[in-house]
Amino acid sequence: MFNIFRDSLFNPKGLVKYANKNGFLVFLYFLILTLLMSAGTIISIVSFENSSMTEETTGCHIVDESFVCDGDEYDVDNLFFLYGFRVYFLPEDVPVSSIANFDNQSIVFQDNSLSIHLNGSEFYNFNYISLYELDGIEDAMSTLSTFFLIGGIAGAIIQNIFLMLVIIFISSLAFLKFRKEIKYKKIFKLIVFAVTPLTLLFMFYSLLNFSDIIFFILMFLAYRSIFALQKELFYQKVLRDHKSNQVNDNNEDIIESYKFEDIDQEDVDQEDDKDSKDDELD
Image (cartoon, rainbow, N blue to C red):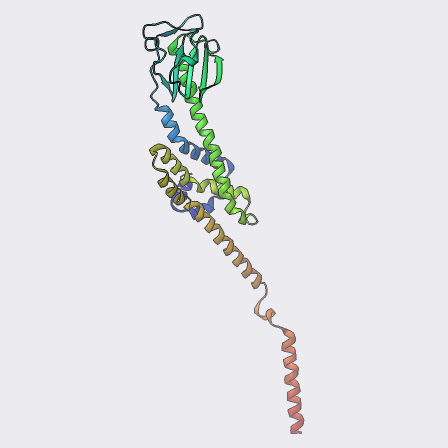
């Protein structure tokens, strides 16, 4: 697998020799590329600095499977964040509309429920405390944080799997001219190996967040592996056709290539000329 990775970066035409690799290895390599592409998002999610939400910082606690906010520290406008979402704690009798500067991505804890709001509208609402049997604010935040962590990582990987498949499919269109000489599953394998530079580009783009102009310039360079692979397959096709023609030509040796009818006619003409000269001498 290391040799595939190396050849994809430094010797793309050498990828042709890996066309017969088994499907499990190709799937494993595809999964590794997907994880590399997702590395930036995963690191961003794992390293996200969430707010510390405890009974002391929020002024809220859980009583009889309900959120009760009656502490001295409680303020409806207290700033809490969880993986990019603004978190609000509301007493049972306070409507969501009373929150000033309500964020576009928000989580609201009220009574015994948790609701998710996107762009000012309620997206999802469920009985959070009863469903997970939570003991306190810390337990509630820990459970929700784990949910967002696993969901965010899984979502990033699934998203990049589809992105990888789209890239491979679009790239394979340029290889359809070889469909009579090479089965599509072999073309698919080779393109999976050849998109390694593109995968690394997406990874560094998400990690370093450099400008889009630089990204598109580097993307053209990253496509070098696919261009080189396409060129090598075309060269191998021409070489095979040339060898095939040579074999067909060699089926007929030099003697068999002569036209014997012409040779026989020349012999007849020479015999006639000789007889004519003999008659003249006589």
